[in-house]
Length: 264
Image (cartoon, rainbow, N blue to C red; front, top):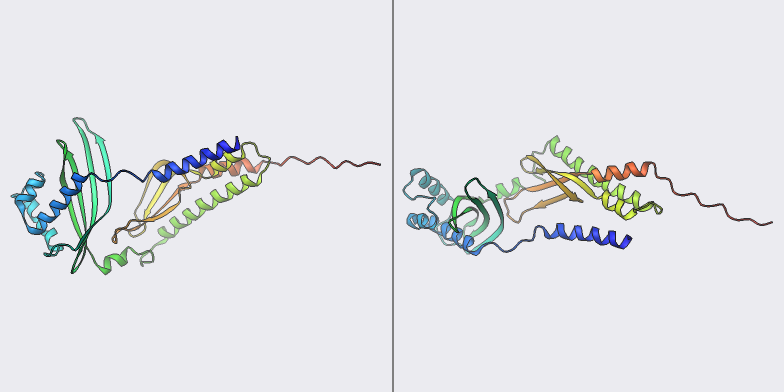
């Protein structure tokens, strides 16, 4: 039984680790985004409209937005284009299913780097660009997203304390259950000690927080995307499982050993 519980715990860990490993991005969407970026850089508005009818070339509002983006992009062709990451979301609407793909690229030019974000919606079986952004990669922006950037407040300190407390309680509860050699279902109690409910997340650069309902295994993480303009993201979970284990261990008493036999 102990071996079965251990295999169950390892299976959960592997499934969580593989959750972020999806299939490759849709090649047609990638090509559409790259062609759109190239057309904007060349001010080829007819190609922009052909690539994505959502961006009407003769719309003054859209044209002004694209002109602002062009000011960020150098005129020479990029030396290298690297896809940083992408996200996919699907939502069932009242009339039809909406599929959205967001792709971030790093364009390396001779004079500097630019991060481009293309938002593509799938319509009539093909992707069309519905959103487009460009941000230059300068030293000031990179420094603002550094882990030791100035401007941190007591909110950052409190969040870090919550992370340390969550992780500490999980480790303590798992250790207490491990020490209880005679505890029934000991491996199950150890697994429970590492489970948390809910997720709290902080953008370390802005201090913005968010939360959602989820079940996590060791849900304390510090991550940063490969984008040079991406912030550090801190996340922890409420250690509900650890609290239950510590409550169980508060009245656990190891069985008493029988006294040694004596003769004579």
